[in-house]
Amino acid sequence: MSRRTVFRRIAQRQYGEWPAYDSTPLYGRTSLAGLESDIRTVSETWFDHDSHDSIEEFVCVLPLAYFRFSAHDRYVGPTRYQTATLFRVFVLKECHGWEHETALVGYLGDRPELCEQLGFETIPDQSTLWRSWHERFTADLRETVETAARTILIKAQNAGVAVPREPARKLRYHGDESGESDPDDQTTLEQAEKITDHVSRIVFPAFSLERGDGCEIHENAYWGLQTYLGLRESLAANEGARSFTYESTRERTPLGHAHRDHIRDLSIAEIREMYRQAVNRLLSEVAETEEFFRAGIVAIDITEADPFTGDRTGHEDEIIGTKEKTDEYAYQWATVQLVGNAVPIVLDARPVRKGESRLEIVKDLLDSAEEMVHVDNVLMDREFDSQHVLEMLSQRGLSYVVPKRMQTSEKAQAKRLLRRDQDRHETDRKLHLGKNEWHETTLIYRRKEDSEYDDHRQYSVFMTNCGSGHLTEYGYRWEIESGYRSIKRFMAATTSKDFGLRFFYFAFACLLYSIWRAVDLLVQVELTGEYEHSPIVTADNTLTLLKKETGIG
Image 1 (cartoon, rainbow, N blue to C red):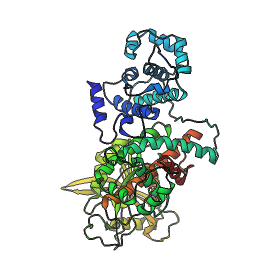
Image 2 (spheres, rainbow, N blue to C red; image 1 turned 90 degrees about the horizontal axis):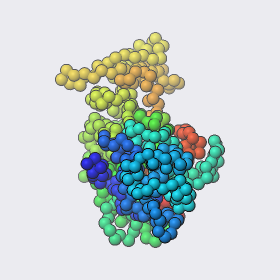
Image 3 (cartoon, rainbow, N blue to C red; image 1 turned 180 degrees about the vertical axis):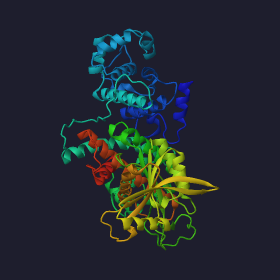
Image 4 (cartoon, rainbow, N blue to C red; image 1 turned 60 degrees about the vertical axis):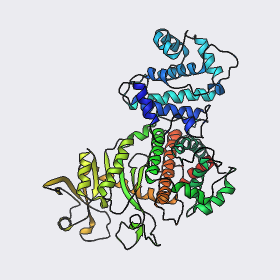
């Protein structure tokens, strides 16, 4: 019954279809990358079930019937043991971390029931297992065994299941290991290429245009074109599609108008769901490194497109005013992003329409974020200075730091602090929620260093429910602004007023940005064993590698 529940849950995921070989043309039934993707998908859901607390049970039930091992079997002619059965037993050996087959044979000899579940009528001897591993399995299949075992251990450990050994939370990729602590540019680029290939095969299958079967132009060509548009600033679909035709290695590529038409057919809800599925796949990769476990701080913010200068008749609810309340109009998008010591991935994005409250926007984005990662602290800009937003965060058990707009009382307090030459001040404050209900918060006044002002404007006021110790974390918000600059750099240009098209361009740019930062983290961890916030892989490097992966050049 529990097994049925798990696979029903996997099958009901809207865009993350399973098995991978059947849901995306990136994989076939002999694709080891597809097999690894399926093991990742199934193990994550399997160990989330309360009844599943055994690594061995999972290894025995892992669905392998669809996979064609024959392409990775170097033996010809009849053999006593099926490759799939040996695959399971070698995954079990790797999960335990046994160096030699002798320990595995002894373990199986004491567990006849396990042998029956694995499909062994008789237990193979040590020499048979050694030959199967070293002579029958290809090098790539052996590496997939190691990857599968590591994935299973990590997913089980994340779910609180006891594991036979501690998994190494450091990714391994094909190619030579580099022991250099300060890798050179060529080494970095080579590693980035391997990892970008790996990541793109995981992320892009989450996106689908639902075009049906029999289409002459491969769907990856559309994502390739969208990536290509992000390679150059202010490149629109028509012009980009013409250049793409010459630079792509594909026989058929989409025309600009066809590309836009397919994207316009996607609803906002569909775009957001696909985006979340893609980011979940990305998080599954970076979550397998120790460096990701420092995640816990998210920042919510709103950015706006360039000012809109055309006729917005009929689009007044979508092309709204600017955040600074000027007489200009612009599209606005809201995001929730990991900040702090974590890799700055954009977890979710959504459009902002006229009349939507900040409370509604924050609740929506937090619902998404808390489904993906553990959230401790929320950082927001002063436009979210709302007592109802702060109360909602407190009710969720979350800490927050939000700058407060200075009203009369705050200005008066800042003037008193200036007269005393006092740099910091804390005071409790009750914010009225209505109907005799109040939200309790703490106001922290802090004098800015090297301020251009000589009056009360030297001070900033912050609201927090977690004490002044968390105030330094607000500095992490700068990542949002620098991130938005990169995201806008990745966006295709358009003059279309189609809301869905505009949002898709923004969301896809957020995805390219997140892939870049994830690839950079994985490259750093692979080459140096550590993660520093300053990227060693550039955005242009990643986009160039992505365009290569999606069929350009």
